[in-house]
Image (cartoon, rainbow, N blue to C red; front, side, top):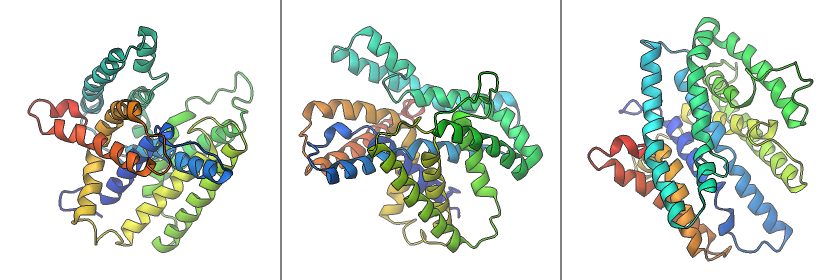
Length: 330
């Protein structure tokens, strides 16, 4: 369902959840000492919810960008890259400047730039995905849902192998063109456009069940020290599927109508609009607050809310400054 600004509200809900989930992944050190198994499992569950963020972002991208008519390849690439590169340049200067100020060496700073010990890896993933989207879009335009299902079938095969650390089966059986993050945009397109032959209420319940079960499996595997390739495993993928289905069907059932125009709805929309800027700004916020870390389980909720708020406030304020909005990520 669309708002008066032609925004698809459940995409805003998913995007807002996704950016909060990404922040969740980077605040573990704000917890206090974990002294009981219950505390460890609670912390792991909280962290593992964060791993839904990146798949959701990519699934939304696929739902919005695939099976579309674009004026030209040049215009598509120019628009997409302008939206991600200018903010990246702006924020990476601030991030690296902060690290330099705190005395980090040049090798560490370079590794942050290329995404080794830092969330900037997602930017480089986006570069690769956007370069391939025009190719994938032409394929989906020709073959529609059947084409998406063909692609997803091969991608699922690679995900199964990666989940069990068996990819590739042998050296020359290379399926990299189907593997890794590129499957998530196709999955997002498929979920939005597939006729499931079930009513939205049933799909909503199924989505919630998939989410809960896959999250429980993900937490259990982590607790038992089973090693998984991050984001490229079946529990992680099904968490994304479950949440996407659940939120999409809630919207189709008009469950968000009562909040769309009130403070909650406006907050969700603002988080969604600021999400790309928040993706970078939270690195600065988390780093700075880490020097004032109370290390308390009781204070953690307040610290987390403060981190989310400041991560939103930075790009929001910058977006209001003339000539800076282009670089703010808003």
